[in-house]
Each structure stands twice: as C-alpha cells, then as structure tokens.
Image (tube, rainbow, N blue to C red):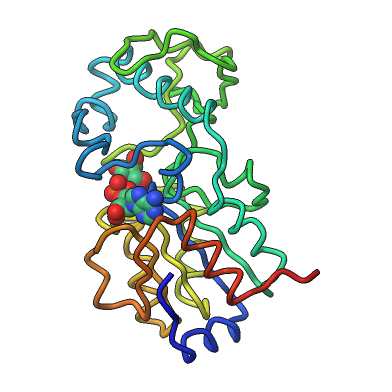
Length: 255
Ligand code: OAD
C-alpha cells in the first residue's frame, strides 16, 4: 500500500464517526462478480433492462427469478474475504461506526458486522410482489445456473408471485436505510468508499455528501473512478489487501 500522508492518518485517527460504504469490489475477491468490470462485470454479459427492472419481472418472471436464484447460489457458495473481516473488526475500535452497502450479498453479516444498511436490498430476503410478505426461500435451489428459467414461488399468504428482495432500476431505495445513510454521510468525520464505481445514483451521492460536509474521505479501488479528484486520498489496489492494511495502520487492534 502506498504511504499515507501523516495529516490524513491524523484526521482518520481523530474521527469519532466513521462510515464505511461498500460496493461490488468489496465482494469481488470472494468470487462474486461486479457489475461493470471490463471482463467479468455482470452488465457486460447480461441485459440490465431484461433482468433488473420491475417491467422485466412482469414480462418474464421465470427469467428474472432464475437469474437472481443463480446469483443467490453464488453467494451461498462464497465466503467473506479479508475486507469484510477488517470492516467487521473496525466496529469495536471506533466510537461510532456506520456500515452502508450497495451489495445484495450477506458477506458483511457473515464476517460479523451487526448493523448493515443495505441500500439495494438483499438476495436472501425475497418477498411477495402483491402483499409484500417476507418469503422463506429454499436453502439451495439446485438447478439455478446463469440464464436458467425458474418459476417464482407463490406467497403462502395471498398466492401472489414472490420476487427477489433487491432494488431494481426505477424503484426507490428502502427509506429507513437510505435516510440513515444520508444522515451518516452528512455528519461523519471519516468516510471510506470501498470498491464502487460510484456511477449509480442516488447511492453514489453519499460519498459526494461526505466530501461536501468536510469529512476526510478515502477511496479504495482497483481502478480510477469519477471521484478520484475529489476524495482526500485514493488507495489503488484490491480491497481485501489494501483495506485491512489501512485499518490496521490507523486503528490497530487492542491486544
Ligand atoms: P460496479 O461493478 O459498478 O463497480 C465495482 C468497482 O469495484 C469498480 O470501480 C472496480 O474497479 C472496483 N473493483 C473491482 N474489484 C475490486 C477489488 N478487488 N478491490 C477494490 N475494488 C475493486 O459495482 P457497484 O459500484 O457496486 O445495483 O455498482 C453499484 C450498483 O450498480 C450495484 O449495487 C447494482 C448495480 O447495478 C443494483 O442492483 C440496484
């Protein structure tokens, strides 16, 4: 990891409220594909309009349900990586931690993070598209593969079609997590933006809000992003290596 200027270290160490904001790059080293990476990004291989909109689910529910079940199987087969573990460990070492994620996997929780603000929903929390009751998904759908079609189950209560528990394009973010995230971004002392292209609104606006509010902002990413010129510090490299080193340097574990 590149040397961090002493002034930035001092501001991070002095931070009382620390926000960690993660995107797909945080789970990439657990084997979960990102969305926009050149080779392996999901939206390079699959059509967003056919899979991640309410209209797509109305048009072809089996295609959409099958695709999200395939992704859920990928998550079930993966493990949290060193970035997830480092973030979970940080919670005990700062006065006020807030963890916000755009990821629909549960790898932060499985690493031990207790309160996670999920802005884009969760793959493991499907619900009825008619009455919005939660639905207990089968533990492991064996046939789910990329491009497979699976008929969505029916709601136990009203018989409506069960839908994936994620936020689709054109839908609002869940209001509670979103409001808490905005408040945290606007009031925090330090904001760490990990593995996101910062291209999807309104989530990407959180980092800008933290910058505008005067927080010290650190971006960890393999590549450059549209925020490179605006954050306090850019750390270029894989999150599972760079983030544990950063957090151990700034907030060493108490033995
Ligand atoms: P993207 O795929 O847009 O961006 C992933 C970012 O992570 C890129 O900037 C990569 O350079 C970086 N990256 C990849 N591997 C990394 C690694 N090992 N370490 C550090 N950085 C790495 O994913 P998001 O920004 O999360 O929304 O995408 C935002 C939203 O767009 C997603 O939540 C999803 C998608 O459409 C919904 O599904 C609603």
